[in-house]
Image (cartoon, one colour):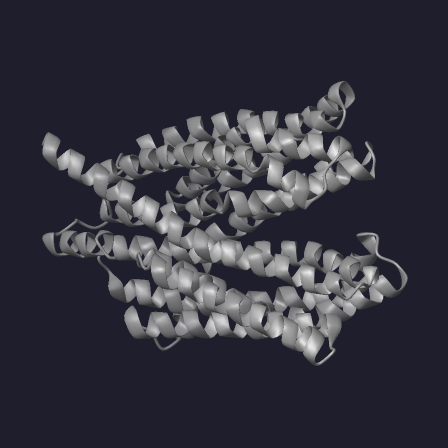
Amino acid sequence: MTEAKAKFLTGNLMRHVTVMSLTASVGLMAVFAVDFVDMIFIAMLGKAELAAAIGYAGAILFFTGSFGVGMAIAAGALVARALGRGDRALARRRATNALIIGFAFGAVFAGIVWANLQALVTLLGAVGETRDLSVDFMQIILPSLPVLLVGVVGGAILRAHGDARRSMTVLMIGGLVNAALDPLLIFGLDLELTGAAIASVTARFVIAGSALWAIQRHHGGFDTPKLSEVGEDLRPILAIALPAILTQLATPIGQAIVTRAMATHGEIAVAGFAIVSRLTPVAFAVLFALSGAVGPIIGQNAGAGLTERVRTAFRDALIFTAVVSVLVAAVLFALRGPLEVLFRLDGAARDLVFLFCGPLALLWFFNGVIFVGNSAFNNLGHPYYSTWINWGRHTLGTVPFVLLGSAWMGAPGVLLGQAAGGVLFGVLAWWLAMRVVSRVGAVPAAEPFTPRQARLISILFNRR
């Protein structure tokens, strides 16, 4: 490969990583913003039990959302691989069957959670009227879980086609519908918590419908479902989806451990940690989106047998992670004063927020490394590596570090311990991912990469 061609490929992949991540992050930020607006509207009602109820429900929705993310990772990886090999028929079949399987498993999962709602909400600590309100809220939203999975999997299929813009637009449309319906239903029709639930369900149908329309209109649509083909695709889909779901479930477990440790230092410390927790997904939405964005790029190139582009995509994703981490940390540092005024921070809460909006924000680079590594594992045939990395990070990389930090330095030590564990497992994920990426191409591809397939890849990577 000539030096000029190498520079071209590197620049092209960096642009693709950047565009896919930034556009996907806009959609994620829209979702995070709507969730935040939901809480603001409920809080405006002046009823503490309503705000608490939606909080308990949110904890359960966090776990159900993990199921959808796992199915989306599987769909995106398999469709991207088929496209990388130039097999559009297989890509269309895999997209169709992934949506069917996701809907079916979502319905089963929703039924299991529905049957155990009372026990789950009670386990989280809800009692009395708050528990009843939370259960009522969840009973409205849970039946729409299969519909949400269709929307999430559909968005992953769009990204696998390189269509980050429409994947972003689908989420933004749903977010706008939710935000528009919230005040109308909560205040206008005086439905309170029920209104918020109906708005969320409506938004889920809009997201699913928009994703399906975009795939049908712009990416070849779907196949007629065949039971034999659904059964044939079930194994490869679950081979990626199950470890991905287990991987996603690690995060709420780790967050619960940190929250429990922070609670030993008083309510003010917990309040400060809550602010940090809400700042994190908004501030680092780009890095959250990076994992889903870089996965199809790696998957397409691996499927096409372009081993050098796989390595370049991985490297460029790490460079992008470093740049984003530095920029976000700088912005957060500059916003410490306004945040102090906005949240009326003092004492331990102020210390925690200021600690995060400084050196700890820079260390989020290592969390980004874990995201990129997991994406490489999922798309290069080692999905269980990401499961072990995530669970290790949120158990062995959390419990001892947080407990030691808490004992030695109080509430700030909890955040420092959590960050230290992230550094350790970020380095481990980097090393393991480098080994996986370096072995790409060691085994000959199942199908030759023809000039016609090369033209398809060129079209995909230069899509605007």
